[in-house]
Length: 374
Image (cartoon, rainbow, N blue to C red; front, top):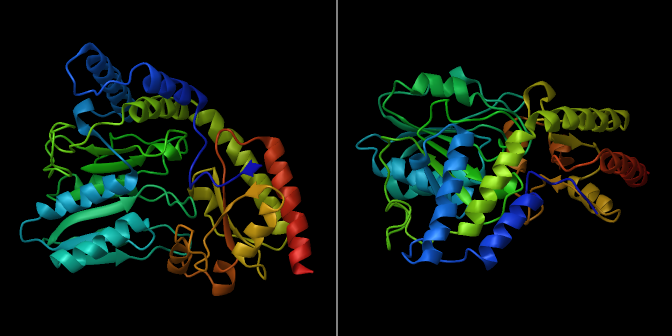
């Protein structure tokens, strides 16, 4: 089996898995208990929090553990809304993850806020000045992703942060697709940043919310007072420990991974163009692990299914599939022609992807396209 759908999820880092296993069977006490087993669990959890903060250039007190990036995003957007005062305007982009767009839609319905959605250019990139021109005295929140999950396009999150730093406006960055793919840390201004461990070879079920010190924050869950009283619920200690190991390894290997994946992506792009295909990813302004491609005349889900018979797993942005991540709206926002968007598939690699796997994918792609276009 060749797995090339790493923007959806990733294999668990082996070292992270071993660290988690020790927690499952040896350091399994409740980290909020005061007996020795509980204190040991608390120790490894807080050491992992410190490691994650160090890697992100943050303060450990700014790191909160959640169950997912979706939860982290909900927490940030809903908390900002509860502290908005009389202001009503939120600014975001048309290519955000549904966790952002649907949460803002819900807040629009329940809280009566105004949501301004900024369209990208044809490369799927938001112009910072186009987004910031909507900022006014009624604006209380801006939410922008760092890297798009469908195309891999890098957004101008730093430029937006530089402008907003002096403003009394909450700023949230969806950083889910950054770790291990591009250089990212929290020295750039933002109030909130959301992360998901399983996107960088950590475990599923562990998210991170960064909250800049001094930022007003409303408790997400009330109960026993865990996570400094802001997110009550017994912490997932094995998940926290595994996340710290996975993040450290992903960042440590970033440079070598980047170089390797750029070469792999170049090979895929060359093959796609030789087949008469179209590349929807802005190659000069995107993370190297991702390439969104279209083979005109072959529907995306048809190509995905054809490759699956050869043991190859890639993603599709087709709106026809109820199990996809809804990426079709991103291509629509880019004004991609319907024929091209219906043919779109996403190939997303990881640092564990090999040259042989890429070569086998290209061979199978050629065979599948020749068969489907016959």
